Amino acid sequence: MELSTSLSLLVEPTDQNFFLGEGHFQSMQQCVNAGYRFFDWNACDYAVEATRPDSTSLIRDDWRDFVKAMRHQADEFNVQFNQAHGLIFNYFGQDECTEFLHRMEDRVMQACAELGVRRIIYHPVVPDGLRESQNAEGCKKANRDYISRVAERAGLLGLEIDIENMFNTRYADGTGFWRYCSYPYELADLVDSIGMDNVKICLDVGHAHLMDEDISNTVAFYGSRLAALHIHDNEGTVDQHVMPFCGTIEWEQLMQALAENNYSGDFTYEIHNTRLRMPQELKTYKLKETVEVGQWLIGRYDHYKDYGKTSKSSAMTGGNNHDVINENK
Image (cartoon, rainbow, N blue to C red; front, top):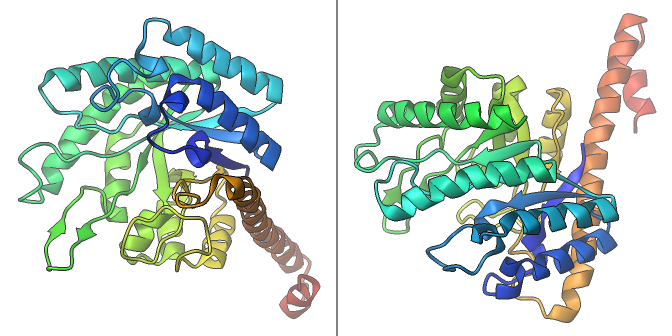
């Protein structure tokens, strides 16, 4: 299991320099200095024309040069892009913006292949007219058909599509905002209905916590479908995207569950709000802290993996479980 993070960890959303590419390279340098060797590439940072018209490097005619420069810098630093976040939009819209984003979606896949990305994370989407009725079957059919086509194109480039679990928003006045695949059974059913080898699940731990899930049960239920993680913390009420131990998620429970269920993917941060209000002078220290926390948690995963191996070995040789526990203290 490798620790990875988004390159936007040190960047303010209004920083146009970052989206033009130069700031992206600077952020990579800072993350490498802090100890990161793997990165999540968030395509949403570069292809949202509605908010940054003609201003990002990915939507320009010379976008391939930008992607090649990014790959060149990664090679120079001896780092890798392990996964990417696909574009978040209503796949089923019928307007010009939607058409543009579909074109950008293909461009994102090509960029991911150039960068060496293995998997792209996708959100399931509620088509227009189905949210109020909470029509899960209609959502399943629409998302199954769409993601199947996406996965077929992705497969030609050697890419995997991992679908992310969502969450239902609960407001103080008792109302809410329903999202398809907020429950593990819906997401597993969607992936199973697609039935393609390169379509799996990304578990967003923060989203699961907002749904009051028992994380051990969720990891076990997803089983071999689980291929990627989005790691961040919250207090169970708002999607805060802060670093582990700044909210109320049971991290020891998660790492044990991942080990016991043979999770073989990476540990990828989505903790961009961790440094949001910090003075610039302190952000470098916080960045190093995020590496230390991530490495410590991966160490707990390794501990439980080793404990499981020792337990199996002891069982095969007739050893005493009490002795195994003492040995691993």
